[in-house]
Amino acid sequence: MKAFAALLDALIYTRSRNDKLTLIADYLRAAPDPDRGWALAALTGGLSFASVKSSVIRGVAAQRVDPELLALSRDYVGDSAETVALIWPTQGEAAAGDVSLSEVVNTLAALTRTNAPATIEAYLDRFDANERYAFLKLATGALRVGISARLAKTGFAQAFGVSVDAVEELWHALTPPYAELFAWGQHGGTRPDLATRAYFRPFMLAHPLEGTLPDYDAYAAEWKWDGIRIQIARTGNEVRLFSRGAEDISHSFPEVVAAFDGHGVVDGELLVRGDDQGGDHLGGEAGSFNALQQRLGRKTVSKAMLESAPAFVRLYDILFDGAQDVRALPWSARRPILERFAAILPPSHFDVSPVIAAPDWASLVALREAARAASIEGVMLKRRDSPYVAGRVTGLWYKWKRDPLTADCVLMYAQRGSGKRSSFYSDYTFGCWTEDGALLPVGKAYSGFTDTELKWLDNFVRAHTLSRFGPVREVEKSLVLEVAFDAIQSSTRHKSGLAMRFPRIKRIRTDKPAAEADRIATLRAMIA
Image (cartoon, rainbow, N blue to C red):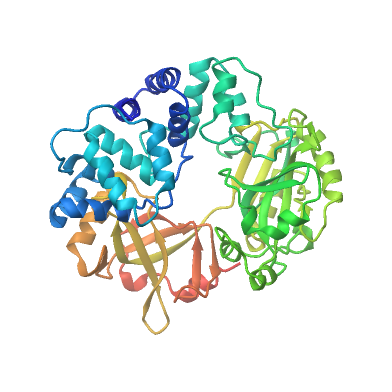
């Protein structure tokens, strides 16, 4: 545990990317198995412990430290784990000797809600401040030390002289503590055989279309649908449905998994059926994102929900046709393979996103502007000769999202953020007026503003607070915020009857009186 704690401490205080890679590589070469596998899992966000919540940590700390002092210290430090690690009153000297990271991980995995507090307390008494910090970060799954999962994998690749793309390809088929990965990387073993496993492959991503428009004839245009990007993989009888973040979401959409009877790996957009908003020329029948959102994250799906919001997939691309890897083929060759593959799938659950029939940029612009009412986010441009490669490669794929909608809203409530923003009121709830003069919340945003604007907004909240509700402050209804959002839909979950998609603060309108902010009716007219 001491070596892992020292690694985290060094990563926090190291700014150079290359120096961070060296720290990770040195640790992975020196640490024993399976400690280094668990460390790699922690650094890439692959560990979680159901019985250890932040509230448990705070409860344990409150038994040893005055609660008011603990709360004030937390506000000042801005991080619960760091606060508890520093303020924890030890019982004399920390215990001699070391505890292996493997022991800690196995203990945390076996905890129950009943014995978690006592076990956590015992470890905090045994560890020094650095170890306490590492332990708490590990236990709560909040291991933010200035590196990304990609950087940790690059550190592994650097440690053992292998390709990071090869590591990415293997990564999601293996599980912590990654014994097969280390056997292959360090000891020159055979590459793990994944032929019998249905697993996630990294997505190909697009750059925003900005600046000079590329040669139109070199690209094919497709719609960018307003659902969630997914991948379906089938090997043998195993079918798995993955989100963009490689999370297995098969349990949330069992009808899609059951209907996928093709063998291979495909890329597409997960949608739910709704009114035919798109029309036949756009391949519509896609419901709103709000309807899809009701099903996301559910461990079980009721029969009523399966009937009211049936899911389907609009296919974008194909990675494997059976056992054949077709990613190296150009898009122009993959597209007919995808169409043949989709033809054997049930049309009730799968179709292919159509290529847009637009002869030039002017025609495409007109179609894009007319597409807001079709559960469409914008347009995808794909080079006809582009292979399917992981990540964002300049010049191959572009996303050309439609321009956002905007509304002038009145700030109503504010809440403190977390992490670096824990000392600022950075989460803002805003509303619009009804016809009879009532102000109803229409959304919440915590992005879009600069650091300077954040400080200004925080000062406004503190100076214009009307009342407090726990961590939330109600403010004087006098400040107008121009809010940008991708779409707006009807919602029965909100008092206003509206739900915004990706709201963010575009501008602080100190020039505009609150009485002149937008009406609910104005926003309702924007519904697709």
